[in-house]
Length: 253
Ligand code: NDP
Image 1 (cartoon, rainbow, N blue to C red):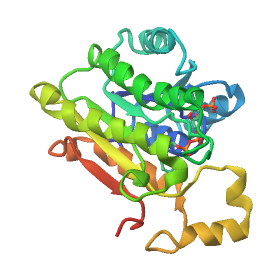
Image 2 (cartoon, rainbow, N blue to C red):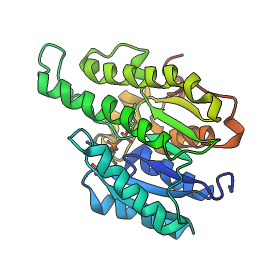
Image 3 (cartoon, rainbow, N blue to C red):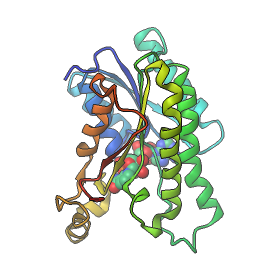
């Protein structure tokens, strides 16, 4: 604890799942966390309450990504929240975590609308969030983009989704050298199957089947991935940039 004292962080999609677990850990390390979400007010409130119960600091920011004006709306709320609490708009840590899947459609059934939606939320929004965040980020800043193990093992039912995450990995890889002179790192973290609280994780048979993918024969907990993300935001990870970090519990091994 206390590795992020006086830092500020934005975690997109932190009302639930991996994003929530990440927000909780960053706050536990001392960061003031902006809990971003699309629509689920109650869940965002719950993340903030979890953080405050621990003695941490957080505020929620609502902005639906993948629609015109999305990133502007996000940063209006973010900058207002930071200013109220810290007196300025400095952002030390960005975790691009919010994403949608391509609805499980087989490649031959996916519609152009589903394809566009998936790219708008998963690839275009992170690009412009990074662009905007860099204007607020001081020396020593940290960016973590959440990808998926599915960019390294073929799962054709998630083809369009995998394509968006391939784009996110390029964002990481290409930008690392551009921002390194500012002491800012950018990395991708790839979860494998991770319990995000969704209904399927209450189904014992489904969980048993999903467990077989990991070398540890279980599904990931949100905290398993959040701990890896949190490490990358600390000073201890200053020598890692442009990297793809496998957080799949050995699924790719
Ligand atoms: P969840 O589906 O549990 O939560 C998604 C979060 O993103 C919520 O906070 C949601 O907000 C927000 N969100 C979704 N769509 C939008 C949108 N259009 N605009 C703004 N916010 C949005 O996520 P997971 O924890 O499962 O996944 C987190 C990340 O990890 C994602 O990038 C995902 O691709 C990746 N991943 C997850 C895996 C898994 O098995 N869980 C496996 C591999 C990768 P709201 O609550 O308001 O809806």
